Image 1: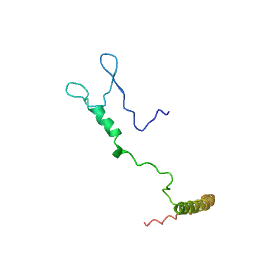
Image 2: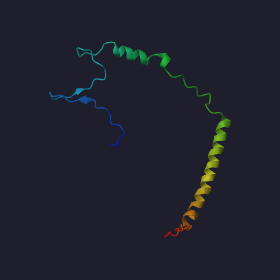
Image 3: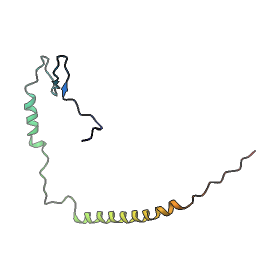
Image 4: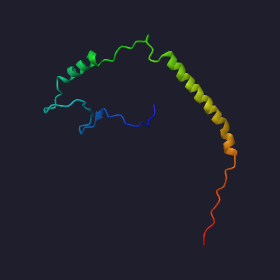
Length: 108
């Protein structure tokens, strides 16, 4: 895996003055330093809420009609032909001498 990333991963351990690092806490603490006991149950209910689940995927119904797919395929083929025609002319365009701009006479 590459060492370069666009955003660094958050650290999982917190250094302490006593030596052994302590894990970072991802849940808010109460004033006495204890985790709220209702938090795991709240997340468990959210994960199991059927209202939050995506609808089941129906593989029998196509999201794109065959006619629309054929039309898109024809457009892609036309663009590919245009690109081939343009690419064919690129070497000829780069070998043509470019006209030198004429310097305007200086008025004295």
